[in-house]
Image (cartoon, rainbow over all chains, first blue to last red; front, side):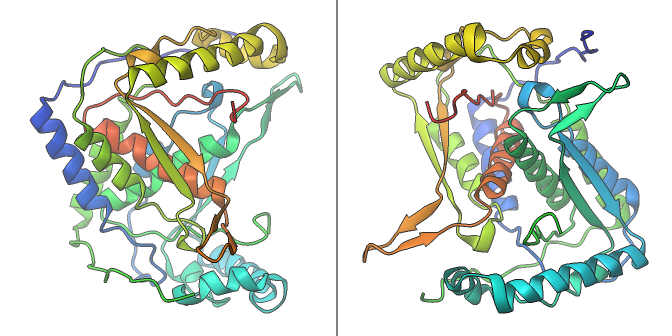
Length: 179
Length: 179
C-alpha cells in the first residue's frame, strides 16, 4: 500500500480556560435545542449547504482511517416517492405484524407509525451506507474496521453540522435496515 | 410505561440561505482542522468543560429515544495507569500475534503501535459504553434498539463538542473492545 497523502496538522488556536468553558457551554446550549423532526417544509434548500455538511461528516475519525462510509443524497421527487412507498410497506409490516410488543410500547409515547410523508416532503434524503470493504483495480478486497462505530461518528457530525447550519433532521432507521 | 416528560420544542431561529451557506461552510472549515491526536499535554482541564460536552452528546437521537449510552470519565492517575497496562497487554497481542496482516498493512502508514502513553497523559479518558437494555425496579428488562447507531451518533457529537471547545481527542477502540 502506498503511503496516503496526509494534510499537515495545524494546531487549533489555543483557548483560555474561560473561553473553553464558554465554547463548551454555547455548544451544549445550541445542540440541546435540536429535535428529531417529522414534519418538513416543502422548501428548496441549496445543495451546497448539504454538501458542506457531508464534507464535515467525512472528516470523522475511522478505523485505520479507511473512511468506511458512503452518503447518497436524494432530491428527485420520483425517487423520494419510491423510497417512501418501499419504507411504508416495511413499516406497515413492522408496526402491525413483526414488531415485538415491548418495542411498540417504548415507541408509543413518541406517536410514530407507518405513515412517512416526510420521506417525500423533506428536500433531501441522505442515505448513509456502511462500506464493509473496498475492491481495488486488481480486484483485491480490503476489509474495513470498526465500521459501525466509524459511520455512527460520521453521522453524529453530519447531524450536528446540519443543525448548526439551521436545518432540521430526522434520523430514520428503517427496519429491516437493508430494505 | 408512563409518558416521559418532554421538553417543548422551540424552533430554531430561521436562517436566510446566505446565512445557512455561511454557517455550513464555517462548520466544515473548523471540523476539517480536527485530527486524531496521540500526544497530549499533561495539563489540567476543568471538568465542567468535559461535562458540557458529554451533556451535548446526550442530546443525540437514539432508537425509540432510549438513550442507550453510558459515559464514564476517568481522571484518577492510578485508574488511567491500570487502563494503560491492560490496553497495552491487549494491543501487544494484537500487533504481534492476533492482527491479520491486511489490518497491520492499513495501519502501517499511521504509525500506530502497542505503546499507549496517551492513556496516562490525557487529563481525561472517556469510556463509552453501549447499554443494550435497562433493568427497572421490578427487575423487568427493557431492550434498547439501534444501540450501535445511537451510541455512534452520540460519540460523533461528543468529538465535535470537544473540538469546538478547543480540546483534542483520540478515538481509541481497543481490540477486543471488551478488554
